Length: 181
Image 1: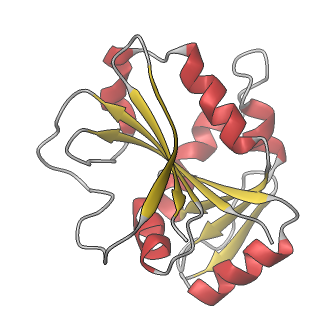
Image 2: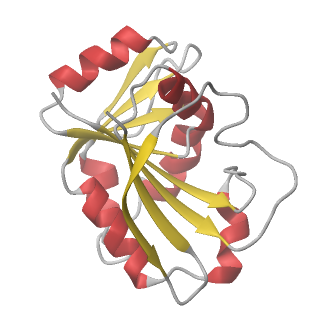
């Protein structure tokens, strides 16, 4: 059975919307190393429709020369949770349909290796509530946003244990949590 590893860019007050606000902090190479470590065991990408539609134009034409993560995003099967997307054009993409916890559990069992999730706030909140997230990789930026979608707006209690933490020269703190037993 595979594990679900979620990666989020987040403000100090928990906002996780489209991370355009992270640009002024730059991207510390060690952040890329942490993401590469998280994706190294993943053999599938699980995304909500909105994130999928943001990722497709950003990643589908990117090459390994432009970004070392390009082969992972382009060659790995992408599973999209959506009740409205019907014909994805990005290679290796499959629509799962509307969110269903049992469908995600079956996918975890079927994929040989883990599933990587980035962004996809609605999907992630549902999976957290259903106990489906095994690893949570948070990159916390040193600012507050005040408003915007939050990772934990009204979820039931989610117990986690800290697996790793790092701080980077750009002020970002990386927190890797695992689902508590």
